[in-house]
Image (cartoon, rainbow, N blue to C red; front, side, top):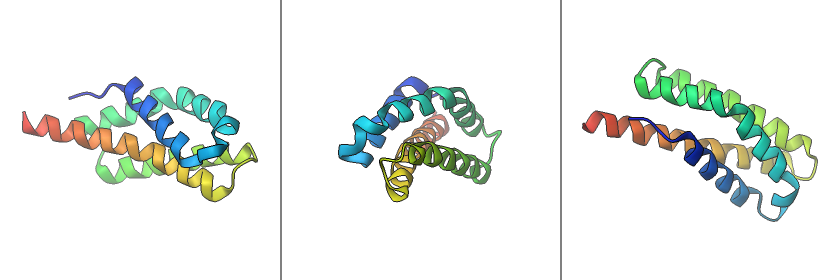
Length: 110
């Protein structure tokens, strides 16, 4: 089972928006650019995990790398605190993790 990466990215962006709240207008562009630049990598990670070519442990490690990159980019804007940048990055990448988990469960149940 595959995931629709565009749908997942849209949900990730929406979740990040909720995490930063009133600061969204200041970080929106950075968040959108991050997701567009990382789209192929995130999709590859998802597909490798779904196919079983990437263990859960390695998948989690790669997601942590992506989270740290997202945090750095959001924090660089300077309008939100480090804690808020961490919250937004975590919230967004949790969506990808859940989508991959759902896809794996769907593939197992077939």
